[in-house]
Image (cartoon, rainbow, N blue to C red; front, top):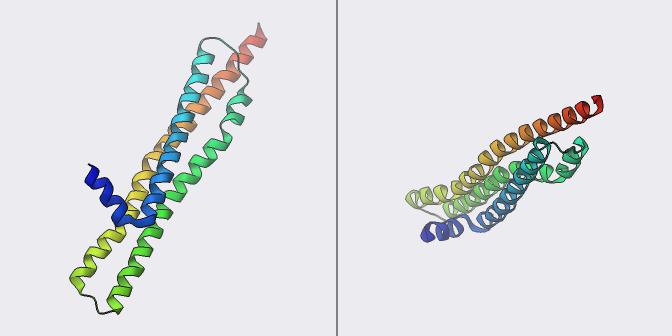
Length: 150
């Protein structure tokens, strides 16, 4: 396991470090938004009234960051691939062998793979969070409406 992590940073270069940092921050915000939304959901289910605007305003910045991270991860991976391919072509121009080039191409593609591995689950998590948030807002509005009817 430790060997694989070391290889990730050695083969991926600075893009791998950037992807790891982005991943840590992105998944922290996803977890934070999930637990906060669940807390609001439970508060409403317990019968307490909370303004729907609280949900919309409280998570707006973090949801925007999550979306930006989902977009940035594959692009950062692609940047790593392009950077690696430039290195491979420089070696070809210097008279490199084809066998050596295939290993370089493989290493270059790793960053794209890592970017997608980060972005795809985050995209699914974002969709779940948005659905949960919408359900919580709807429940809050229904609770306020039923409280006014009494």
